[in-house]
Length: 609
Image 1 (cartoon, helix red, strand yellow):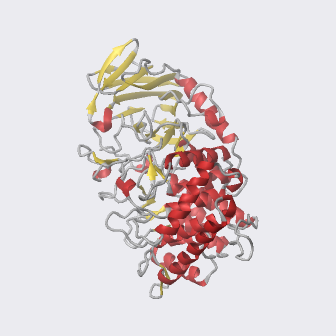
Image 2: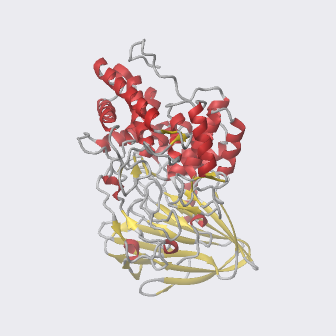
Image 3: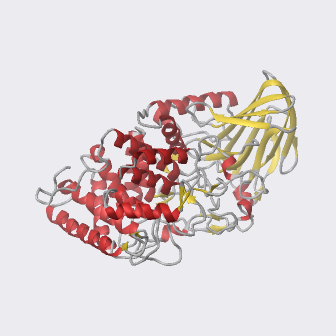
């Protein structure tokens, strides 16, 4: 098993897929067809699942950074004899700029080795393993390339170095002196495509990728607090976006564990409806309005007509519904953490909070959505109707419990939010009688939450109706406008959560959660700020943001004892949490109201407040 830790990895993206490269110059993960496609390098899950390393032969020190305003990674290796830089990028379409990047990327991984000082003897090892390490490809030389084929996959390696070619891997050594450059490209194509992988110049790939990412970022100006952190996180979220559809995946990896050696190892290379509202808020705060439009178009198309079954909670990047889980029993897993899974059976669950995320996003984007398209109006009405019905049902909750359904408070709160936003839309969404029915249901949900979610024993709103057990998800209550953060019950809840679920600056989701959950900690930032504890909120934000790795990437969770990132990586939810927390602090400093008050019942329900 590679000794690289989760946080040792940098992240490359091309609008369709992503790669993870560690501090030692090893590409340990790449699914070239698309984010959720089969991996050709899977070393992060098993040492025999494939990798591609370029590194000095002698002992070395490493320093790395993204080239400014890009997802192009430059790693400097320093040895006793000299220094070299290895610059890595996934290719964008030549000449594509702004919102056009990534729509038809050529699926090429480029690596450029440049001598900086003295001379350094380098080694290369190339071991492709297709379909998550199940298939060992045969290598052959063809017109100056090393062609690897097996099953449905073809890879072409073009190397500016002499390589010895064995049946299943290639090796080589070469010396790089100051000023010298060696170029390497690895192109992917389906085995039965008429066209071979694109033959691109590695230096040109690097230059074009830098220009492409910078052109995208230049269109999205953010003027609030923590500008550089927000811009970088926006770039990461864009790198997690499948550009053909506009869908944002939760992470680029599968089965990286929440706890080392544990069993909660899931595939996150899909699109969760829950992330939708928070993603749109983040994109809006980062001035990514075009991405907002595409996200809503994707959601309406993916949802289709809602039937009587559970509202879908997640999709593949092109709107696929069936994400049935499969075990990869041949893989040992990261640090021995098994099972290793592809697919995610959470797609079968009822999670009633998703209706709130969809209607919340629509309300937030109402100016851009006005007038509502027929398909969007139909979707929003269906979500309001489901909220009015489903709030009484138990569900799996936002943490996707796999044992039993319960009456999760965060799900009820989001059903309330769905109905509240539907009422705010008023006649733009439905006839007055329907809106009035939603208003009645909204008030019923609110009354039930206030009666059943509060625990005198805990002195807090708890995670499940009738329970005394705390859950950090109740921090969403003020963030969605259910109660002000200054309400005595919310103050008591926040205090209880901090006292019993916090470990330093990190919040666990519940008592016994193995690590701090990053976005919950950012929710606490928002709650503290809204409650008037602005200084504490800012200090907590900065400590959390500093938890990112050396190139500014956040995982899903962090071990409070060791500081090690855990879970799938990089995690969209965590970067979205950073963006929204920074934006919320900026709004409060500017005196902006987080959410307008609910419409007065004495005025028409179609009042646009």
